[in-house]
Length: 389
Image (tube, rainbow, N blue to C red; front, side, top):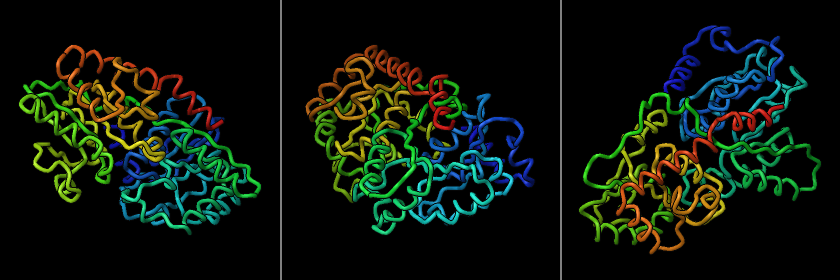
C-alpha cells in the first residue's frame, strides 16, 4: 500500500495544479478518464484508485484522480468538497462518479456546458438496493433516494460495476420504466495488483503448534455467522488443543450483542484501516480460510469475491458455501472446498487439519488461480481499457 499512501499524501499536499496532476496533458492523444474523488477505503481503492494506477501503465489511456478523501461513514458523496478545475473538465473524455442517491443533474449540466463531448459514468460498487436490514448502509436507502438514483441513471452514459449481477439488476430496473435511455452497462472486476502488496516482501507462514482458521468479516454479518456456529463449536470441542479460530473484523462486543459463540474460545481481531489491511492479514498467518455467507443476491454480488481473493492472494485455502460466485472460483479439493451443509464444514476442515502438505498445495493452487486469472495481467488491463474506449 506504499504507492497508495504516497498518492494520498501527494493529492492532499500539492499546492499547484501542475504539481497535483502531472498526468495532465491535453495534447497526448490518449483517452482521458477523470475519477471524481474516491474515498480511502476498499470501494474507493478497487473501483477508482487502482484502475487509475493501472490505466496509467498503458500507452493508450491517462487517468487523473481529482482527490482522495479520508473516508467518513457518515458522509455521502455530495458532502465532500469536490471542486473540479475547468482544465480537467476540458481534458476529460470520461468522468467517473461514485454511487450517489442525490441529484447530480446540475453537476452534469455544468460540465457539459464546458465540454459537450464528455461521457458520464457512475460506478456501483455493491447493489445498494439489495442491502440486508443488518447492513449499516441500509437505513440510508430511502424510497426518495432510490427514485433519485433512477433519475440519475437516465442522465448518465454508462453504469459500471464489479460484476454482471449488479449491471443486470439495474438494466432490468431501467427497462421497467417506459423512458428512453442511452445508458451502457459495463462490468469490470476488482482485481489483484502489485500496487496492493508493494509493502509485503513475503507471505508469512504460521509456525506455532496451533492451526489458524481465519474468518474475514464485517460487523453486520450475524446471520452469516449463525451458519457456522455449530460446526465451529464441534471442531473446537474435538480439536481445541490444536486449532484456533480468529474472527478478523468482528468484535467480542458484537458477538455478545448477537448472542454468538457464547463460551467458545474464539479470538477476535478488530478491523484496521484499509491501508493496513493486507499487512495485518499477512501477519495473522492463517492456515485455512472460512467464508460463511447466506445464499442471497446481495452476498453473491457484493464482497464474497473480494474475501476469496484476499485469502487466495496469500496462499490460504478457502472453504465457502456452494453458491455463486464461489462455484466459479473454487475447483473442488484443488483450490478450496465448497460447503453444502453444517457437516461438510467439519469434515472438509478436518481433511485440511490432518495433512499439512495438502493444505500447502491447495493454498498454492488457489494463489496461482487468483494471480493468473484475477489480477491486472495484460488480459485484465485490456478488460479495463475496453470499458473506456
